[in-house]
Image 1 (cartoon, rainbow, N blue to C red):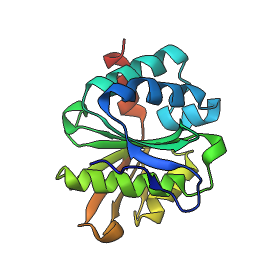
Image 2: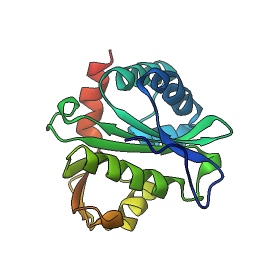
Image 3: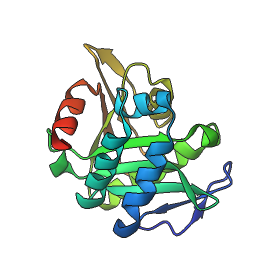
Length: 188
């Protein structure tokens, strides 16, 4: 699904799905621009540049759908929809990152809506999102979309109701502790 430059109401940029050819450099450069705290929130740890480069290359080659928020031709936010076969529990996984300069403008909400629509178009009824306990922004965003979060033993789970008239989508929020292990081993 391509969103052909859908304009965000609060932000001054555009949102569209990246083609596979442009995915690697645009996602990589965006993730490399994330500050230390944002990288920690996104990957649940302090990740170096070489990890980011390998991660972006993997996303460009494994069928991950990237929906990007652009300002002045530069990706400042990204929503990732990873195919279920890339996940240890065979569920499609979603992830978000927004650069500090683009925050508090509705970018995360716009990306979340577009990503859920993309998942729905692919027939996914259940999505997994990983976040650390300290990532208040991601927990707030999930809650905004109707997630009833439950925290225990480093995991949080929640369900999201009908966003924008779509069928009910379930989102499970888990700690990144187990995911970081398999992701890092895949990228070595």
